Image (cartoon, rainbow, N blue to C red; front, top):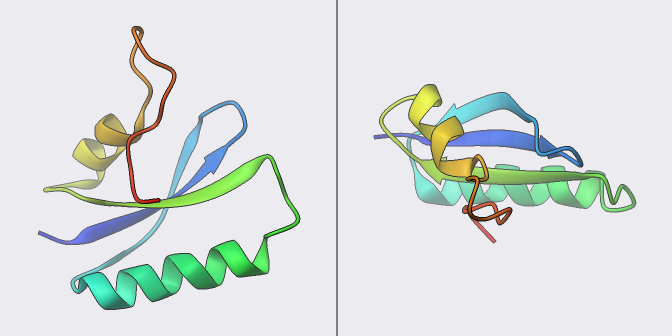
Length: 73
């Protein structure tokens, strides 16, 4: 299963960006994205280990009972 990388906006909307097969390369890519956009408080970058992009979106989406986004921190 690959690691999927998403951009998360302030309104919790998700935008699929890329995928990586290895954890290390996925983590490096997310760290570079975060560093490049460190001044923007309304955007964050997350990665998730999932079977598909759809499952990744589901895992990162907030549920009705919680506004917390589950993902890589």
